[in-house]
Length: 174
Image: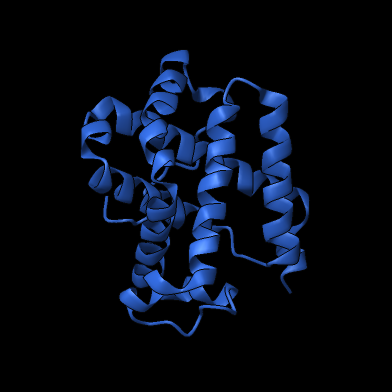
């Protein structure tokens, strides 16, 4: 996996089965209980392996050392924000209207306000999966668990691309 963003773009929002939803929600509980550490671990891995992503974060774009990143208050705060957003998705997997609202808000914010290239959602999705497998092997080692989470990350990326297209991302970044 290696945090390469190896998430399929073709996952449509209806591709999660009820079994996938149950697996995702069950395996998410221990992660969310450790959300502060998990959020930092995800972002440190993301920024260490993909330093170009730091360009969007003025408060920690100059940080190079992973230990320094782990101590940065703004990075910790953003890690919490990422995990809280993921928690909101996980909690609402059976509510298509709520998910649509979440994806629209997240996509518009990142496209229009922050001007984040959508490829970083794909990369971050791969990093999240990589960190979860390493940090929570008791939950994330089975292949079916990884498959369910890969579907969810694919949906996230697909939805972000949908919203970016709707807001005219190609035109707005010029």
